[in-house]
Figure 1 (cartoon, rainbow, N blue to C red):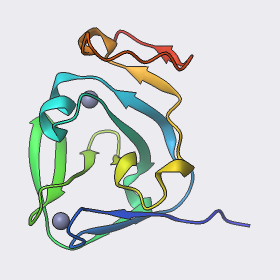
Figure 2: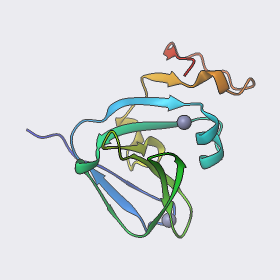
Figure 3: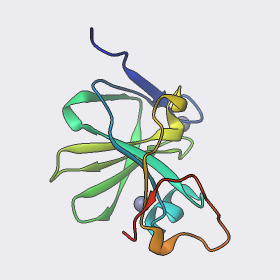
Length: 129
Ligand SMILES: [Zn+2]
Ligand SMILES: [Zn+2]
């Protein structure tokens, strides 16, 4: 039996997405680009093959590094996805899922820029990058 799809969307409801299959490498990201793009001290992403994710609604994209586009709602600006053309993957923002509790992050990455006042002692692996 196929597992239930993962659905989510932006704050205003204009953009919705649906992903099938199993999320890969769900994790927290502490990098400076995610901090700037989301306005949050840390965010969490889970990857899917691009072919398994469908978006509806109008998004805009910003190329934050070569081949990597950060996609956000054209109306409310919610940061929803990071698309990487080379790897053919889309990282969906776990907090924007309708049921974010279904995808627990398993690792912390880019802890070299973790904010010094943010203490997280959850027992997960913390990677420098
Ligand atoms: Zn929106
Ligand atoms: Zn990041």
